[in-house]
Image (cartoon, rainbow, N blue to C red; front, side, top):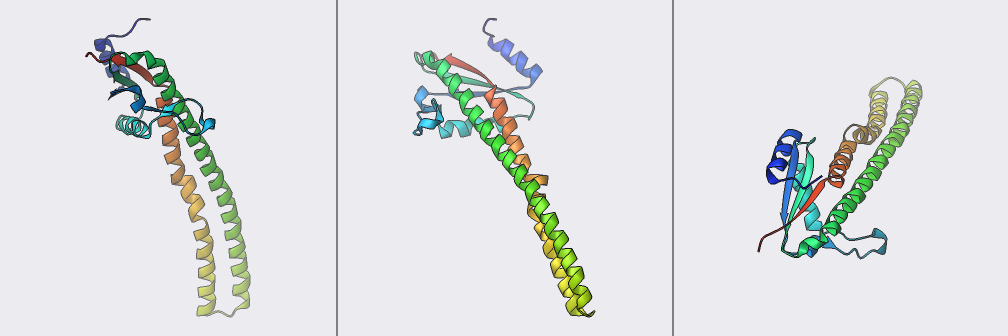
Length: 191
């Protein structure tokens, strides 16, 4: 399959809802860094480049595919495979990291929910036992209400994790998956 022309790309972008992000670089090293840590693998993206790509990607509709276009000075296009590999590796790493955070948040939420339900049950049982021993009056009402409220407060964090917090990680996973699979085009700028 040959290279698509500018008009063909624009038509495809209109049909498929593709988000094009354009980066103009003076040199490739503005975007790529050599990691200090030997365990992180090959070259990765500069923090500023990563942040720019993520911010621009978030501006576009959720279901749109990402199409990155890099304009490089003449002679720098020989590193196009290095750029494409770095982008895909970097966002694969970020996707996997977000998947782990999502898994951890859900595990923490379900474990916390189980503990909170057991705690609430124990507090309700303890409250019912103590209220029977204390004569009716304002002290027994205060005692009962305080322990029941304490039990419900214990459910707050697990419920928050399971209802709301996990969505942030899921959004990141989806965004990084799109960036991991994005089409990368390297264009040589005319002198």
